[in-house]
Image (cartoon, rainbow, N blue to C red):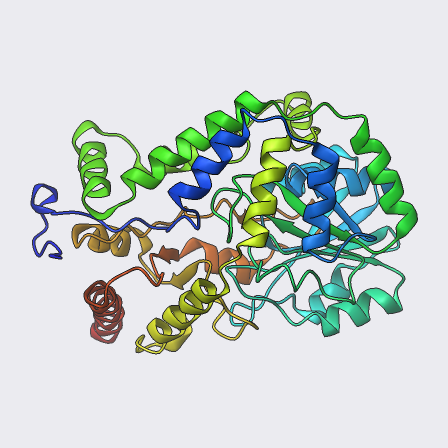
Length: 423
């Protein structure tokens, strides 16, 4: 392997993709074949829940967003009720809150632990508060002890979004929460290219959710097949040399690499009209998707997850300024994403790409939640996201690439420190 040493795009010999999709060609082939087979949806759904030990408390949905929409609909909260939300989450989760006539109120997070700040939970509380929605970020988990105590003492419902924090079918949700939601979308750990599993502890609410979902149309097989083929192409092009060719072509023809990759991995198109957005959410997963989800749960690769966690911890220890790493004190870190926060993220991304490492400010679709009028804006979350860069830290990356990446980041920080001293 040789990483380019000059600033010339033309001299790159390849590029390491920003994210290693957690799926094999054999898995995708299984999904393609499943699209042509006669499958029993109900049997597959039962099998998925059994694999997660959620026969009595589980629900399989098209996506976490679909499940969140179902749960809000099943509760029938009143217009104007408020949901306290982790200040960094997926914008669609907030959009769904608003489509139900509710108010999303962001609660700032601690950039070290990625946990909600307890005093800000208290400050955000009003007589209209009904729900707390927390998002575990970047492959780690926050300590829910304080949040759960806060919710319990005030009679609030607690929902955890574990879309980025799946660690195996034997661990499906904190017992202190009312709902736990796990995603198997394209970028996720053990991806099935869609699908979600929810743990819902209130049996009556779960029954209503199942009834509502039963009225939905089923996801089309052609749509799922199209996604499988797109991802097959992405897996092929994500190898070192083909990805370098793709990056060079984007540079030469003025295309946006972030937008190109994001268009393939995005679950739902952005900026859709509300009616279209909700219509896309409100489908049952197809039988081929359920078959794929069952396969990925049965063959869950805990060893790769452990290797990914080890690679992230080892790389973190090589950063001279430890507080660059957002979430460095979160719990059970598996490093689904590895974010660093720097003063000039664009310059760092450009430097890494010149050396054959595709870092990005947009690997994940998460964003800072905008505060409603009259409420406090999440300052720490905004500062963190304004300087975040997501690095390609995964176990398949060769040691030389880790050396180059750590050196560039440490040099970047050192230069900035020297510039501040000079001023």
